[in-house]
Amino acid sequence: MEAQGRIIWMDMAKGGSILLVVQFHLSYIVGQITPVNQIYWWLNDFLIPIRMPIFFVVSGYFARRSLQLPWRALLQKKTLFYFYIFSVWNVINFGIEAIYYPHLDHSFSALVSSWYKPASILWFIWALMFYFVIAKLGGTKPSQRIVVVLVTLIGFIMVTAEFVVFEAPVHNQVLVFTPFFLFGAWGFDFIKQFLVRRTGLVFLLSTFLYLAVRWAVEEPTGLGATISYFIQAALGVLAASTACILSESIALVRKPLSYIGQNTLPIYVSHVFIANIVMFFLIPEWLLNLRGSEYYMVPLMIVVSCFMALQIKFLSDLLGQKWLFQLPKPLALREHPRSTINV
Image 1: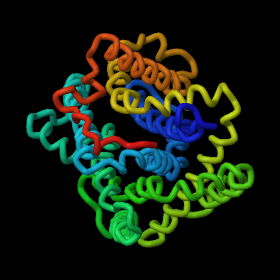
Image 2: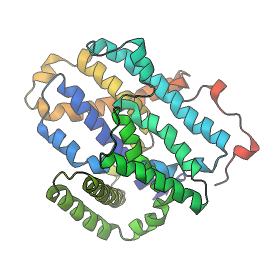
Image 3: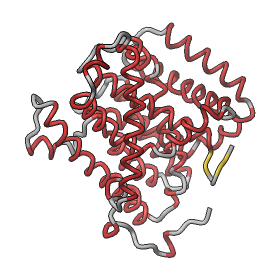
């Protein structure tokens, strides 16, 4: 199903992956205040090969139009945009964290270092700055793309096999997920129609194999870890994609997931900021003490954080404070005839 040029099931996949990210972060935040049931940690561990790969595959697919832009336009509309958004919310989160995590280093040097060693809560935005440039370097010629793919696969292998481990986790993560973004931009279109035509079969096979591999394979090392992760991620992307295609006809699933998928930016950059404020300053004690709070606090905070993030976006637009989520006009690119794309 397509609406206004968007592929709904891909929006759903992106929305679902962001919800998994929010669940991961909020499990830690809620756990600082009140016990969290182990099911959330198990869910996070079990879905690791799905959560990030599907997000970057879909992000790469949606990036195809932008990659047709000339270099100057791409750098300003994408690289500068993500650098700006990262900078704004990096300062906001850094300042707020100084209040409720005073034991952490919040010196000026720590703030400066966060631009090249970003915190895990904003690393997506930081990574996307580079992914657009890397994909653009591949151009349109197969020979160029082969070189870029080989280089990124070497990085993927070196990190997943732990031949090279960087001190900052985000540097490892950027190398791990670059191939998924490139596949989304360059290769996913070739299998998209097949997934739509053979949805049920692919879903059953990929889900069965994913479950089998996740439960049967112990923690491998070296190249075994690389092969294991790659197989699990590939199966996870297929299973998640076809699950979204199958559930697209269910309005109760389609509408919220696709809406979230179309509004991932405000949710991603602000959900931790919101959850910390609510959990540390606003949540009533009686709510934390209710029976079963270890089960319901995480999903409750997911709903609250996502809702408030979307309200912040709505109010920022309403009040003319779009700088929270958009490049200010002085930094925005002036349209040039060569920068336009006919699609």
